[in-house]
Image (cartoon, rainbow, N blue to C red; front, side, top):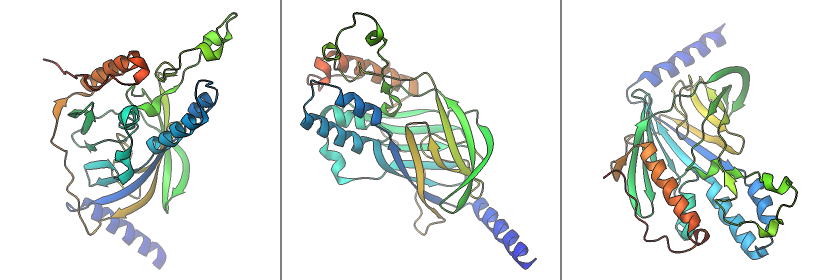
Length: 297
């Protein structure tokens, strides 16, 4: 009986703590995207030397394995990649691609106002993407698991992936190879963007804990009755490795005010246009430094 009373008291105290105006939390997430499909394509490319293949695999690993910090309160959060010294060592097309692999800038979202903003840098220019949060139609499941000592519940949703996030790209299924008289593999185009495609939809699996009753999560994920500690879309897994509630050092949770303000559609349209130009210009090598990006007038 005493144990039950103690548990109830602790639960009430935790709830009241979250209701306090000064409440704040911090969560560390490890993001990893599988590159096995891309690696298979690289191994089958006869025009690529072993040294080139190894270099690309190493850079892809740095692109798709990242650590992020989420600072949150009752209604808002900021999500930012942990800074690493070697991040500036990558150059050329890989640096541009890395900025579209789930990193780059500070992602601010306010679940009360259902708005978000994300400062982005593309082709040497800074932009502030501001738009409404996407509300996923979450399906609540009964399955549970424990993550970091917290009991989590499963939820799933179907999402239209972003065409400007390279983590969503899959190797293109080349139906031409199945047709009689198709050209040999070594004669096909080797351009990266010609070899990939973005699926029309992906299934999202999330694990959230009601023990931290805030409707927050990594990146643009939100809308569940508890902090999301893990998200999986089949290729990318974002897993929380650490949670600190009411840390001693508070962080100012507010959007970053810099760059030209654009909507998500304006930004995506401009990026897709430049990616197409990049694809057509010598398979993405050289000649792209002088490209200009224009939004509206």
